Figure 1 (cartoon, rainbow, N blue to C red):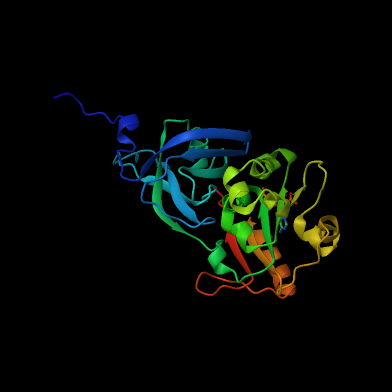
Figure 2 (tube, rainbow, N blue to C red):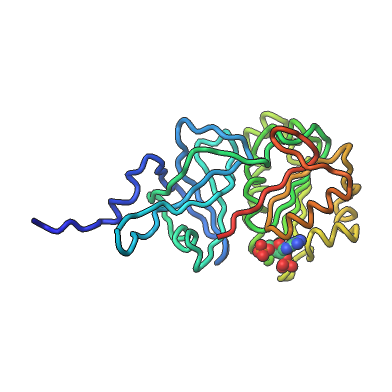
Amino acid sequence: QAPVTLDTAKAVPTLPDAQTVTEVKHYTDRLFSFRCTRPASMRFRSGEFVMIGLMGDPHPETGKVKPLLRAYSIASPSWDEELEFYSIKVQDGPLTSKLQHIKPGDQIILRPKPVGTLVHDALLPGKQLWFFATGTGFAPFASLLREPQTYEDYDEIIITHTCREAGELTYGRDLIEGLKEDELLNELIGDGFWKKIKYYPTTTREESAKMGRITDLMRSGEAFADLGVAPLNPDTDRAMICGNLAFNLELKEMLEGYGLVEGANSNPQHYVVEKAFLD
Ligand code: A2P
């Protein structure tokens, strides 16, 4: 009998949860985004996340392969035909060391069970909506910024994005620029919708137009002066936080200091938090 060899290329996803990659864009040696097909029956709310990944390497003794999955915010809006993700590349990261090499036509695994707290349902009505992001924490806001409800529910959207280097702001900046040409948003909300947006990008380790951590810039009052807005107030301001753990904790404490209360799907309040994916 001929030996049975494991053809990993064929053995990989004949799985029910496989989706096909349609586009990949690399931004820096640490960041990339990609798009893939969307399961026909999958519904989600803009801002939610899903588990995605690849098949792991075969077990050295048993030869069994298991999926390697991580939580990823969906960066595309709920109405989009495809799904988009924004990812870090960690050279020795179990998943992203492999995921960074995907190409159009490749398959990824996607468990179609979206969940999350960065959703409109978890916030009480308000006037200003703040999106606070660091690094790849911008992803859920990329979804919410393309969601018409965001502009229907709020007078003004204020986006802060703090990254180490200027190149790490590109994905967010391009996305916000692209909103000006977004036909759906222009049609639904009128051509002034994007004037509702205030964008405040900052860097911490490379020279850029505005330097510093957003937390420090808020504490000193500089961020509010630059933006021409008052500090956050529970009567009018709502906020969503998504970044690294230290950032989330620090900002959460600051928002509580302004009198904002954390909300959840079951108990809508003034702000919500979610941790950005780290490999
Ligand atoms: P810094 O360069 O001063 O650490 P990372 O890539 O490590 O996730 O960080 C993304 C960005 O978040 C960096 O600009 C980093 O600034 C910033 N950052 C890290 N911790 C905090 C924090 N506690 N508050 C505000 N910004 C933070």
